[in-house]
Image (cartoon, rainbow over all chains, first blue to last red; front, top):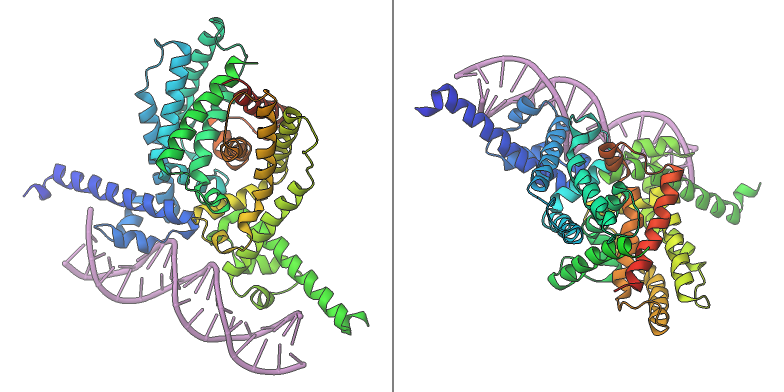
Length: 213
Length: 213
DNA sequence: GTCTATAAAAGGATAGAC
DNA sequence: GTCTATCCTTTTATAGAC
């Protein structure tokens, strides 16, 4: 049988690993690092707890792998954006819309990053290549801002880092703080009409800031 | 001795309660709800673990009390703002600066709210008066926006809720995501020069948005 | 590579004296 | 109201067979 071949075993191993990662991601997303239970994760996989330790060494090792996978996901998505040959304002708007949509559609990524910040970012600090994760999007943003400023469209001179923080803050917060905001103000930020209203607002806010010093 | 009087005992009880709350707040802030240890909290107080259960019933009860205290803190601070008789733009700027400063100076509050959102806001959902916490600041903001729009200064028509989300997002995120942002971009968002640059940016961004539709 | 059973320790909660 | 000592469940992690 295929299972007894070298390739078959490797394929199974990869599938098992991915199965564990997927289940673990949901668990860490929902309960945080300390709140997540290895037993609960094991029960929801096709395999057993022993395998989690076999592949990832520890609960923390598993968490680190989940976090790395999540960052790889957004990096891959960002790589599909091609903004170089577009007009500066249109390119910027499209980038902001992309960031908004990605956070909106990947609440689990947002929650994982929130969890990691509760733990002082100590696990991502050990990740290799982490610096390069958002380096591309920052470079792209810097290009857009430079072209826009040269063309006289963006009259305000800014650091790409600052604008990125601004975009990120506006897109991240409405997802990460969905519950507290919803409770305090009695509204659902994920409702379609509010969502699209805020999408427009975020884009317009950044553009207004750059155009009108 | 004073300790044996009714008043003395009550004063001690209040002090003990507050001591526990203060220590617990630091612990929950640093490790989250699940990550915090009741033993660790007890060790850092003047009193013992037994007293924590005596006063707060459970770890979750203690956490809820800490959360409530934190929200009471920001409500109290916001109440000191008197913005009614100022010009709309000046009033708005002062409100944003206040929000920025409060988040900047109370990172523990920010982290607690982040923790609470990891837990789907289930503890604040049970808090009474939570709806009224930010009702005042929203009402004040609504007044400023209305006056500004009437005076033709804020040409964009907006919901106070949306503007509040915007301000909150910009002020909250740079504190809550300090670690991940710092690691990915190799910078310290709490450094004084970056801090004051961002303070100006946040204020200008909101004002630009409202003035230039 | 995968399973069952279990060790080892941590951590939430309480009993009962004073 | 406060202290010491302790229970008992939960949870991380591993041993050892196949």
